[in-house]
Image (cartoon, rainbow, N blue to C red):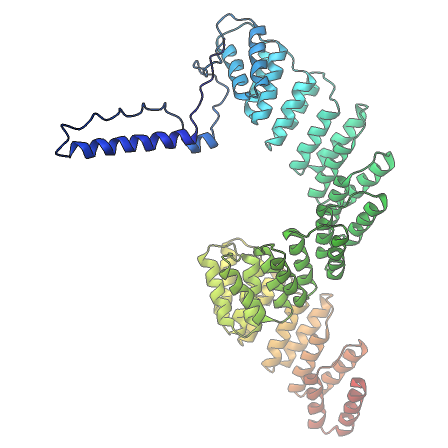
Length: 608
């Protein structure tokens, strides 16, 4: 028999009891100290104490005890006498289930096991598994399956389905897939629900190959791959960066005939966005329109993100305008993708306008919103606006991240405030933020502008100490810092180390070295590095030729100057004003006035 449930006092009862107790104590204290206390009337007794109840926090967040191993003391009203038959336990558990008391049902099951009742039947185990699913107790559900085998009971497919489902919901995808293997080893045939749960577990674990294997296994078991299973497989491919397979699965779903909803289309668009296939993402979006599939906010966000990764800011803004026709309101994800698209397209005005539009629509911008707008202003050569956005972030209580600091340091460098950029780097260190290649590159460039080559090299050593990747962009920034400080000997040693140990210098790195030796009036080394650049099958650009021409002209090597000038013009590259002046000076210094006049006329004709 089940005892009547204890009725817990409400919060109002607790407050009234506390107030009555405090009033009674104060009245007793005041009477005791009064000179007329002896003749005072007797006070009413204090209210009886209420039974002890757990605190409010404990009632809000109960900590469920583990089901196994079971303790002898079960909860009130859930007792099962020793020797009761399994039918009694089954009825008691059913009563708890009807009362939506899954903890009581599990307590009945646990106490029946502990008291040594006769072997419980499959219905008791099935109800226990269902109650574990409601309580998200995946450890207990695995233990219950072990107990079934100890009682010589074989779990059936529905029990395995429930167990796999709860393990998947609790992000225990390893146990979910392990249960699928146990099901096959026991000679059971999985149904569509079993395969769907296994594919969903693979989707959460980003195991796209295993998900596709389960999808093929469904056909091997003569099961139709339904919409839920294929959508989960497409999502697994999307998380694994397999946009081609996502498109293939979507095409297969369209051929097989079931009416599709927006879930597989959204997953395919997201897969194309991850693969930076903006054109294919727009194609899937248009296919949804043509088939009459409902386009949701998730669809628009995925498509705008694809356009953002492809630097298609105009198409992203056009999609945002189409949202109004579908009566959809952009959220923070939409705005962040739009601002990031404008950042990649170097459209700082649109980025700032979108940031202001977020506030007008009462959508609070976050760190990503401000960082993208700040980066757009830095790329658009608007350092003042970028630093103003950084101050606005701090005023709103937002903590800048690494991307924000990288753009802010770049803005300080463009504004000629290299010391402010180094101060921001110190702030990054104080906040113990993670240094990455982008942040260190911006800081080294600021060091180069300020002539602080020692700080640039110390930052490079700090990156080595933190085991960060030293790519060619980082080392080129360090080379530039040395070149701007006039430390061409150290730059030469670093370039030699890059050529021997890697990463190999690129065209920008060689241009930095050519510029260093041009400033040092060392034309043979400038010419040698131009030749080495071509020997490494790198394409020299107009900067490479113009710097070398200027170096040869400074050294009064007019033969080399004219040969380089002819090669530059033969490649169709423009001649800078500095190189043109250097060529005219070299020709005039050697008395070749006629050639100087001819070259000046040809240059004037080309400029027209």
